[in-house]
Image (cartoon, rainbow, N blue to C red; front, side):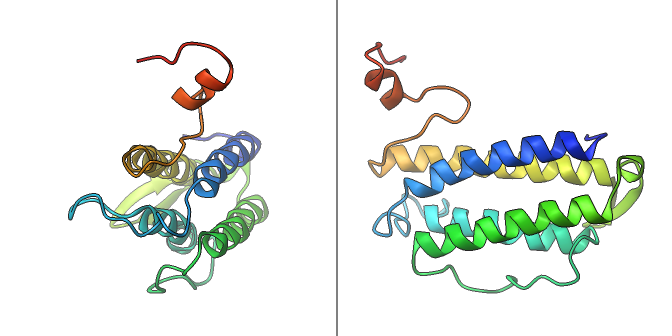
Amino acid sequence: MYRSIEDFENDWKNEENSTLQIFRNITDETKSIKIHDNVRSLGRLAWHITQTMPEMGHHAGLMTENLLEGLPIPDSMEEIIRIYQDYNKTLLKRVKSKWTDSTLSDPVEMYGQQWTKGQVLSVFIAHEAHHRAQMTIIMRMVGLPVPGVYGPSREEWVNMGLPAMD
């Protein structure tokens, strides 16, 4: 749980960079591939990550409405990336203008439960990291290069002239 807006801001910017690394490696040709009936496509996951910002932001009182609710997945990754970046910046701006360090322990009703505002911020981070991890597995399965997010990926080890870890 976050106890300072500044700590969230630093993490949020790092997570945005990690998410954009993943999104930018997805092609329009691979974004719709379904590797299994019970597994979302890369495009669906990218759009879900994007749609969650205004959805959770609306529930938490950070946004007055959820303008992405019910909208179909955009045709291109470029469009998903643009919308993701817009909402990423909007969410951070709203957090900084509406919440303070001293209000992060205040309760907020989220999905029929009571969360603290600091917990909401933690879930934003964890939710995005969770779905990025799913995306890296799908990327491997459809033949896309996987960027290292929290350390070098297999491809990055090889590019550094080091043995790839098994």
